[in-house]
Image: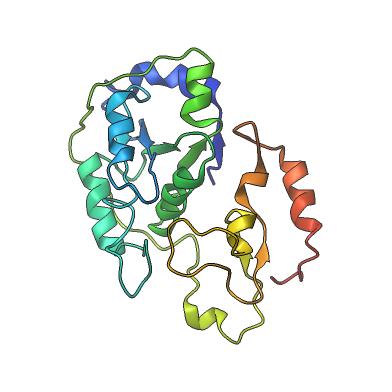
Length: 231
C-alpha cells in the first residue's frame, strides 16, 4: 500500500512525467483547494505547479454536488472512475498527490483512489511548499495525456454512514482544527461545534513544518488516545 513519497524521490521522476508512455508511469496531481473559494485552487495551479502535474479540484473532481450528503459528499464511484480515465490513469499507474503543504486535500484523493480499488497512490511529503523550498522547478504548462483505461476494483477502504454513528459505540475522531471542534470559530459550515462523543485529534498535529512526523511519533500519539483495540 502506498503512503508517502519524498520530495527527493519525486524529483528523480519528474523528467519522465510528461514523456513516458508506459501504463505504469507516475502521474502527479495538484490537489490545492481553498474551502469557501471555489476558483482559487485552479488559479494557484495555473500560476505554477510541479512539472507534469494535473489539477484535481476538490469541488469539480473529488466531490459530488452539495446537498443531502453534505458540503463535499463523495462522488459516485463510476463518475470518478470516468474522470480517472480522462486524466489518463491506467490500472498500473502510480498516482502521486500533493497540495500546499499539509496533505489534507491530497489525502482525500489518496483515500478516493483506494476507494476505487487503486493501491498505487502516494501523498507527497512536504507538498508544493517543500518542493519549492528545495529549489525544484515549477511549470505553468497544462499537461494532458491520452485517455486511460482505468477500471474499478473492489474497495480497499470502508465508508461510515450517519446511521453507523448515531447511537453506536464506534469511536469517532474529529480531525479538524481544535477551535472548530470546540465551536469557537466556524468559517464555512452553518453550525459550529462537533458530533457528540467525537474526540478531537487535529490532523495538523500529525505534521511538523509541513512534513509528516516519524511513524513512531504518530503511533505513540494515537496510542495515547487509549482507544479500544477494536475501534
